[in-house]
Length: 223
Image: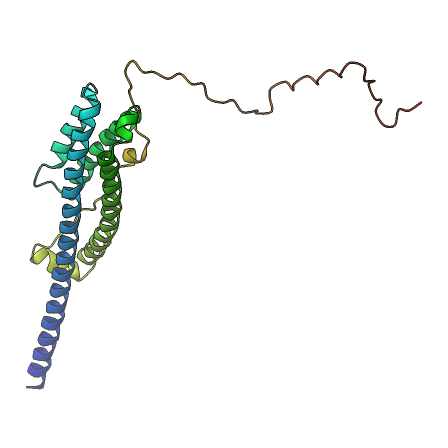
């Protein structure tokens, strides 16, 4: 009887431990999903602002058709439903690069830069980008915690039994951090970069003394 009670006690302890592990996995999965929904809200706002920005630029620079079409295509791809976090990050990277080219082109139009609607949209877009960055950090932190639980023993046993797997991070690609390359078409600017002295060039010749001024003798050579 004692052995039966001990066995039952062990089964109860194991069952309670399994329930605790399962609940912890579900809680962490729900946190990551909730964090992703917050990113999705901010991305939707970003896409709307970019659409309004394109319409504003089109009113002043309609002949910049290639750049405008690039942004429209990238925006449509980023708005495609059902993308995984990794695929969404790749789409947003392409959109960011196209948007950077559009903003650079807009610098050539003073009337557009002075437009209050254009300025307000840029400010709203900047604030939205900051919120996306904050939401991304929180989401990636929840994904890291979930993946750690899913991969460690004995959590991985229950995770496999109940179909709770790893989640994807939402990270911008390295290329998105590079400055966008702007193609101004016929408006090319060939401005040479300033040259710095490296120490291998020949030193400049000393200036000739002014007329009527005697050349002073170096110290220690006075006769």
